[in-house]
Image (cartoon, rainbow, N blue to C red; front, side):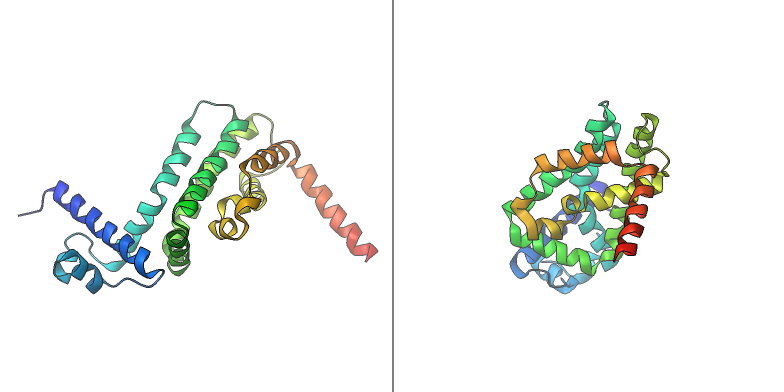
Length: 214
């Protein structure tokens, strides 16, 4: 007889909570299914009733970590606000959430970042998802006359480079109070008013001129 879905979800949540407690105690050390089973007072075979294999477990851990950030991206993308505010909130709200998470439990935050590096094959899906939502906002901005002459992919790449310290958790750890959210507002304004194919061409020209001078 199959388990009721509510029982499965409760068991999955319990296991994810146990994993976080182990990470909190030990840091970014690979958690084994044997350890999880011991902490959960169940056999290792019982773990497979909730997660078919360890890869699916790590996907669930990543989903749990990114869920609030994904919710922000979904809400901002669907919001009925001017595109200028939308682009700012797309980064600002996630940055504020990330900063609060770091300030609350810095060691746990660091551990999750290290585990993310170890399981980047899982994390990359959320990076791509972020680019997908950003592309939607940039497409809307293009309808309002921004990013003239650029493709959506090029604009996504440029914007990501310019706001990198505000979306990269390692940068937050290293720079901390040097990343005021007010500065992000200025960065977004500069991006919207200055980023276009003409500015890209001018940038290449300036680099060529510097090369000739040197």
